[in-house]
Length: 603
Image (tube, rainbow, N blue to C red; front, side, top):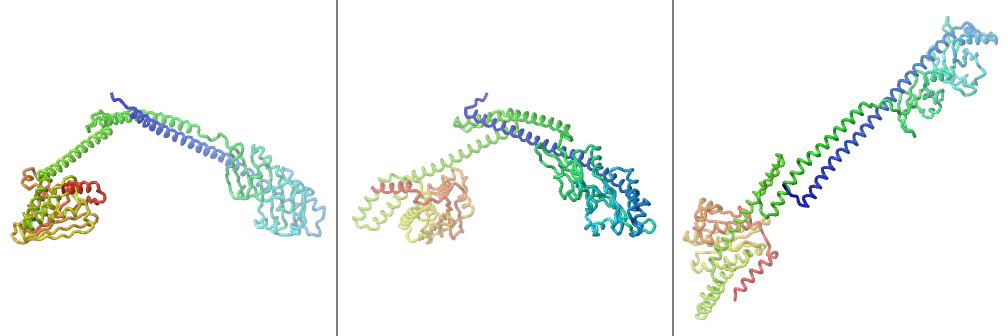
């Protein structure tokens, strides 16, 4: 059984809490979405229900009003056919008297006895002589009567009925009660000549009785000019001119909740019906809400089950895996873990971790091998060294003896040899400045010239900005030695050795070129092969070209650090490309050890 540390437990609690919060957040989000959806669906259905009720009520009332007004319009047609009224309209102005006017009025009233709701009937002759029922209840605008503007809409329809308000404003009730007027032009039945104009004013009580009969107490009837006609007067304030066009619906927020203001223009009549109704519970789709509630409960239950499944089958195995990794870390050894994981995905994680452990172990082995190789190279250098103090003291003693004997050339040669070995055999750091490395080569070539004479010519092309660059110690001298013994000497004629140092794009290019016998491509390939076996390595000298290349590779931590160009019988050029540049001012400690070592050996 895996034991969790306190840190593991805290991590487990944190991850578990995170998962719980995640699922809780999802559930809350779904619940909030559910509430919002139910709210909008309910509000939409409530509004649709109220709109449908309002549309039905207004349409029914509009049709009833239109039908009722049409009935009054038919009565107006009967009135204009009455013989007494016809006689009044046909008579000359000189023959019209009070008796004729009373006869015409009685004829009108006889017809009106069969229909309630007519407040008055006014008939004007072409000469504006008027006869009217209930005349005393009205006030007349005689100035407007003498104009033609109030007749134009009636004359335009050629005898058909025109519905207006308040007799086209030529007459109004003294008590201010509005009336619905049915106007009609009167034409003679025989001559078809227009003989007058008639207004039948219908009392708004007709519409009020209709509202009561239909139980429409929440409806107000307005004129298109904003005149209140009948119905609930409290709703008069909701009228606006935009209602004069067609049916409209608007929701208004009230103190007790939202309510719908619906309006409808009565077809071909100057009347607008306004209905105000609050939003109720009608239209709410309870069955849909019940189904949504059931689905919500199912989702919450499923989310809880998924959360429990994740906590049991994902979180716990992850922490087991983590605990195994922690145990591995504390043991100090990089070993693979063998914890049993039941799921493929988590097994992939374990496999990736084990692969990483294998890769890290391979890298460690490579680093160990490189360090061993470097140590072997350094050991070979040390094996070539002799005790510095004994060597320096012996050379100085021999030099003084030669100088006392007058052998100046011998003394200078010994001084050069001493300078060479002071640099060559210096112990301490593995690195050296470039100009010091060049000085070693110069001393070495000076000694070789004593042996071979003028057969060797050396040239140096060193940029000033690279003199203080730090590089591995003793990488030029083996190249120069190789140029002498395997190049110039074998050619049997005078040769040149040229050492060049350049900084190009921040990279040091260091080359040694000789005019010796050159190398074959096979030999170049063998030198560049970093996988040569120990037998081949031992065949080279301790300062051989291959060992030098290998040291530079280790120093730069890459393989492509050398280029070898050669042409048989012409030249050989070995170029090192060192991108690990360190300025001498950044290596005071290393340089100090180097300088101290040289100065200490002077004694």
